[in-house]
Image 1 (cartoon, helix red, strand yellow):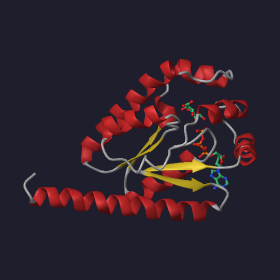
Image 2: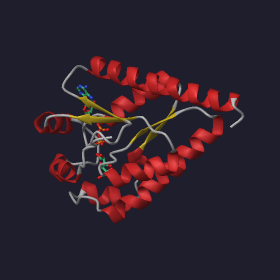
Image 3: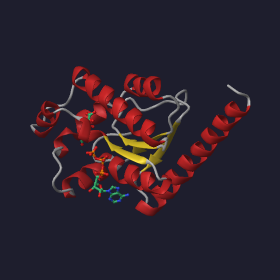
Image 4: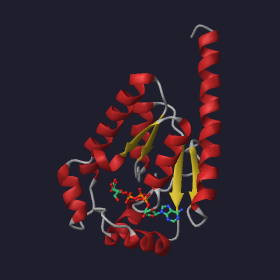
Length: 178
Ligand SMILES: Nc1ncnc2c1ncn2[C@@H]1O[C@H](COP(=O)(O)OP(=O)(O)OP(=O)(O)O)[C@@H](O)[C@H]1O
Ligand SMILES: O=C(O)[C@H](O)[C@@H](O)[C@H](O)[C@H](O)CO
């Protein structure tokens, strides 16, 4: 999760490769009108985002049910209520909140080519962002100022730990016949 340009796609793709997981790009689930709005510099509203979040959940569940493999999703999930919807629909999550200095994110967005999101929407994303607090216990905060390798190492350690915990919990519940 995180604002535009913070590196969600980059990290999520690498994590999915590492874990043999499905990779879902949140941007692919936006209806055309959402993409058009953002491309024209208009921030999305809650009303624009609810159906989009629901379709990400449907896609994630379908992918997982096809072969039981884990699913990694690149999704802004800017507000607590969006993350709560994901938790409610998808069950246990391991969330990485990518954060960074506004100027660094802006510079990366300006260098990026072929993406619909204009750098001028960054401030609206930062305004919408409700950074997870400590009571959202499934979130790792990861600053993006380090090298890509260092970021991926930290992300990998967090996901691996969460996957092992999840596997242990599932095997314990299978043993107990639950
Ligand atoms: N650690 C990093 N170091 C340098 N550049 C990076 C790093 N991570 C990502 N980038 C570059 O920053 C740009 C934004 O990254 P990316 O597209 O992954 O962000 P995003 O959060 O998925 O963006 P959006 O939400 O707008 O789709 C890309 O050009 C990417 O190659
Ligand atoms: O919630 C949102 O406003 C959107 O998901 C955006 O964050 C973009 O889709 C993405 O980040 C584009 O760059």
